Image 1 (cartoon, helix red, strand yellow):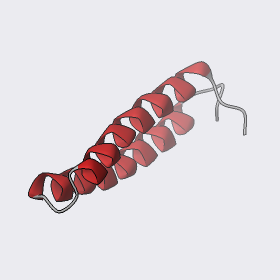
Image 2: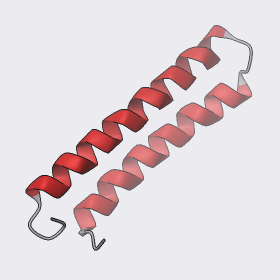
Image 3: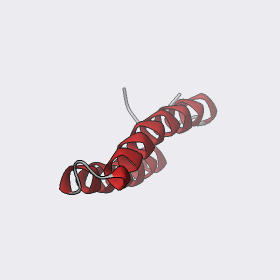
Length: 63
């Protein structure tokens, strides 16, 4: 699937944010903040999927 520059930018931002949360969760394993960060990472993955899906539906270059 061919995607536009905006799609790649949005995806990269979400993946960077998810990476930070996962790394925090791994560094602080066993603490409540790690569990919270892991949950946030999971919900951010779902938000990324929704955002990219709606982008593809609207974008003439991607869709």
